[in-house]
Length: 224
Image (cartoon, rainbow, N blue to C red):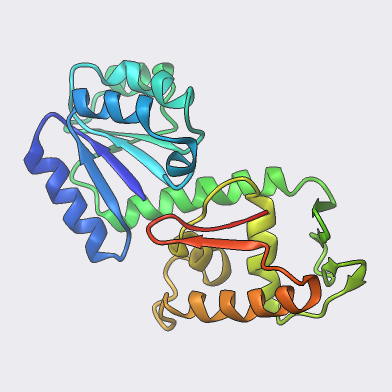
């Protein structure tokens, strides 16, 4: 889910529509409503946010610090005009990237995906991750489930690794798809993720006696 903040409802609604057209959920806020939302929203819901986009608004230099208190999702500022001084001010305020409008939502998705890949590599610096009776290795070998190796097709293994790396967070179907297929694989429908996850859950349930993967509409998937 993407969060768009701007003084102008026309801008927030426009980006909501563009993201929806790409199959990505988005919510638009005016600055005052966003401040209330980010302070009051539960951690579970905030964990489903993939990025925050800050458009033109007087208070935007204070938003990165406000966001970082609740979320580690990328913060991207959108400038109406090119200005080195304004760009440097935004980076000093704590944004992760600055783009000039008009910017296509696909470019924003690509930038966020690149940030997520770098973060994922940092999280994957450990050789393995264990949650309960599941242990995954990041060297291409099969995971261990209930003390025994479990052979999985490459994409199901990749999904399990992605969920384990993001333990404690909700990841959307789009995030899973991007991790497995790449952002611009137009040959494959994103709905295939549900089939892969369903098969993976069935195998884990048969081995463990319970389903460690939880799914919720609008939030996506998480593992525990």
